[in-house]
Length: 220
Image 1 (spheres, rainbow, N blue to C red):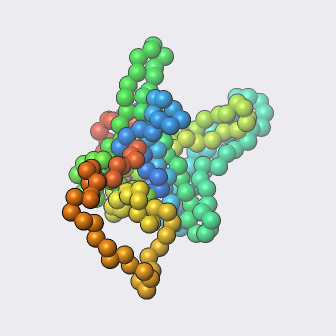
Image 2: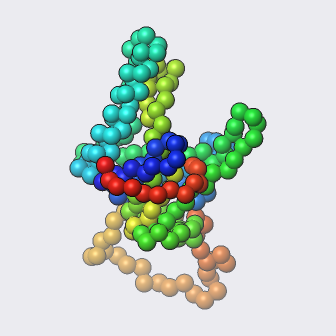
Image 3: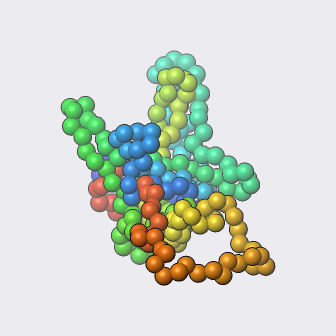
C-alpha cells in the first residue's frame, strides 16, 4: 500500500508498494544521454498491489488535465504514466531524478538518492544492488504539459529507495543474459589455476531530490 509523506509545503511525496527493481542507477548518475547525469530506476508491481497508487495518480492527472483545458480553452490529450508487463499481471513504473539541478540565477545544486535497507540503515554502492532486488520507492509525482504532443503527463521524481531483498549486480552472470539454471545440465568442474585470476578480482559495477529529512505518516 502506498504511503503519503507530508513535508513542509513542497511537492507531495508517496511510497510505492514493494516491487521488483529493474535497471537501477541510484548510486551514480547515468550520463549516457545527459551530461548533467540522471538517476533512474524502474519498478514492477503486481496489478493488485498497484491499484491504490494508480487511482491516486490518475485522479491527480485528471485534475491537472481539467485545469489545463480550462486555461487553454481547448481539449488536451493524456499520456500514460505506467506500462503493463507482457504477462499482463503486473505494471511497470519509471522513476528518475536529475543529478544536477540548474537554477534560473545560474547556480546549481547536486542531488543524490538516499538508499536504505529494511531496517533504515544506509546502503552504499558496495552492495552492488541490481535488477531483481525487492524495493520500495519514495517519489514525488509532478504533472506537466507537453506543448509538442499537446498532452498532459506525470513525471515520477525519484526521492529515495528502500531495499527489502538484495540481488547483486553481476555483468557476467547467466541470469544477466536471461538464462535460467538447469539442475540436470552440464557443469564446468574446471578450476582456475593459482595466479590465473584477474588482478582486479571483482566485476566493475554499472551503477547508477531533495535531501530534506522526511517523516512518514499513515497509509492512504
